[in-house]
Image 1 (spheres, rainbow over the protein chains, first blue to last red):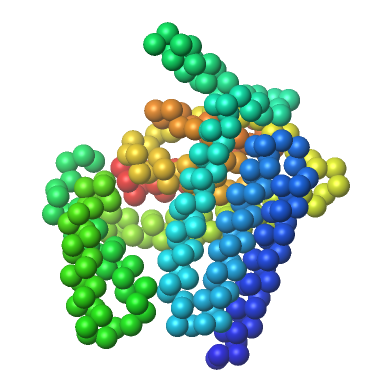
Image 2: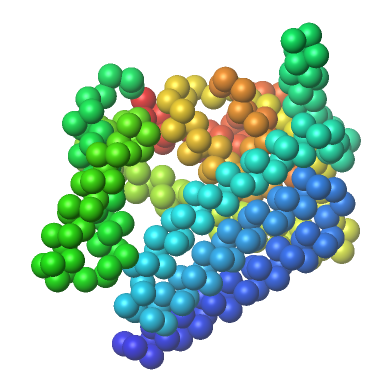
Amino acid sequence: METVLLYLGYFFVSLGAVFLFLGAFGIFRMPDFYTRLQAGTKSSTLGAMSLILGVGLMQPEWFFKTLIIIIFIAISNPISSHALARGAYKTHQKPLTDTIDAYEEVVKEDETKNEEE
Amino acid sequence: MENVSNISKLIYTWIILFIVWLAFTSTLATEEVVTGMFVSMIVALLSFRFFTGTGLSVFTPRKVLYLIQYFFVFIAALIKANFHVAKIVLSPKLPINPGIVEFETNLKSDFAKMVLANSITLTPGTFTVDIVENRYYIHWLEVSATDEESVYKEIAESFEKILLKIYE
């Protein structure tokens, strides 16, 4: 049983490392801020989650603690990416797009309102 | 949603905090459990007003089943999202077509909106930029449709269907 858990742990840690690497590679290859954020958020979330789960499987007495860390990552990581994206847009970091930018109007409206005040 | 009694909120907070305590100590020794009950009660008394908007009403069997279903839908989407990003990153041509789309949600409670926003962020090729009232602004890596109907169908429907049953 312990060996099985150990090897499962190795598997998840390696998987996490691969996803984290792909995330870093994505940040390197993507053309603008928002697409980089896409690559960064997704891979780092699953990468960190599976890495930590692997550690929990290797050390069964830590398993529940690692579960709590995983839940915390699942909640906090997307929120930080919302904050980054919103902050970037409000400081005029234009997204690279050929199709549609629905958010532009909202920001413009906000800004004119602020100026009036 | 607003008229949840304080006692229900308090008990809900207490239960969640106590489960977290049990997970952190990872033991069922009597002194640890008793201390945990006292400590989580004190923290619950201080924080229950901000901790939950739903109280115990999410703990009906039907809603718990939907929560479990949501969990699996979410994990599947998360794994799919990662392979999706991996595929894009590794393909030499970098096949992306980014843009920011919008759609309207039927959810009412703030907490449900937050859960939906987080779920969208962790699913293939999309993340939430902002929520204004009940309009979501989503950055999409591969825009395949720009009208609200099909955007909603493509991105949010599978999550929102379950969330509506849990929180409304």
